[in-house]
Image (cartoon, rainbow, N blue to C red; front, side):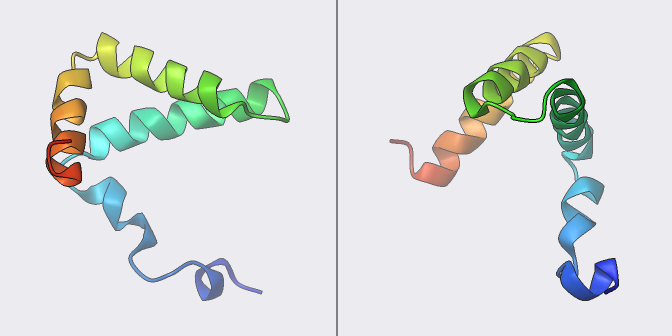
Length: 73
């Protein structure tokens, strides 16, 4: 089985868009956590992502984007 027979076309396009820096940072956090433990806790992972976005001063941008997508609720 070949990888690209299973992965949908355009799967990696998200990391070539305008937010590629953010996505690559989040992928690195996921990779680091998987290297640290075989069981990744969702809450720990999300906390690490929020911390990193805060360090990059990007958390407000992401929160605004989430609100925009959800309709402002």
